Amino acid sequence: MRMLFLTTATLLALAAGNSARAVPIHIDAEAAYTGASGNILTMIPLGTPVTADVDFSASAATPPSAYLADVTGSFTWDNGGPQVFNVSSATIGPTSSSGVIGLNFSGSGPTIGSLTIAQFTITVDLGTNPFTTTEEIASLLVNQASVVKMRVGVSAPNSTSFGDLDANVSGLIVPEPSTFALAMFGIAAFGAFAWRRRVG
Image 1: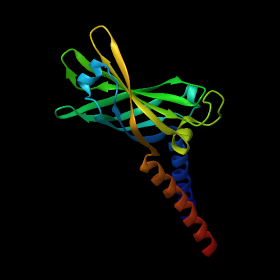
Image 2: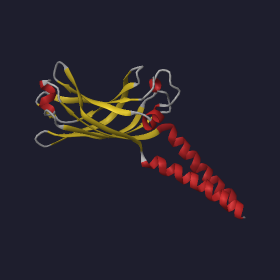
Image 3: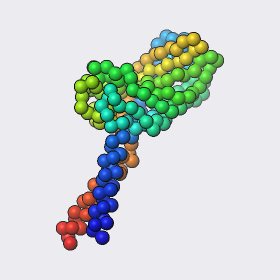
Image 4: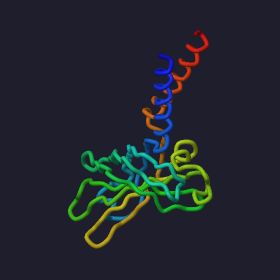
């Protein structure tokens, strides 16, 4: 019985450790466009808050080699009615030695005439040089990164307009609750086994 309990606890703890190898991360952020590009203003009215609510898994690698997977979520705003850009994939870049990197989200969203949203970017400051750090990107994102700004790209037939959404930007980067729950369950199982062993 004790061997079965130990095996179960070990597997749970290992599962928690393996889940940390591709850490599920959630980002909430909000910013508004205050620029002058007519194409962007057609899609996102001046000063209108854009809210990001996205989830992804960050690979177990340092920033230059990392990738993002399991991407879901959306960017939402109002333009005479609710507007939604649903994300389906994400890439990392550009990356700066200053610590600033872009998380580029692609997907599908509203179209007005010949204009459509090409992508949204959440720019974060990792707080360290991504080219020299030995920390994995997931650890940097969760433990010390901060959201700097958001950026939008609007596609027209022959060009794409990009603009920063950085007025009163706010953001929150956290690991998904399921990651913590699994880890805590594994730790609790080990603790219970140790207690039973002392009592026995």
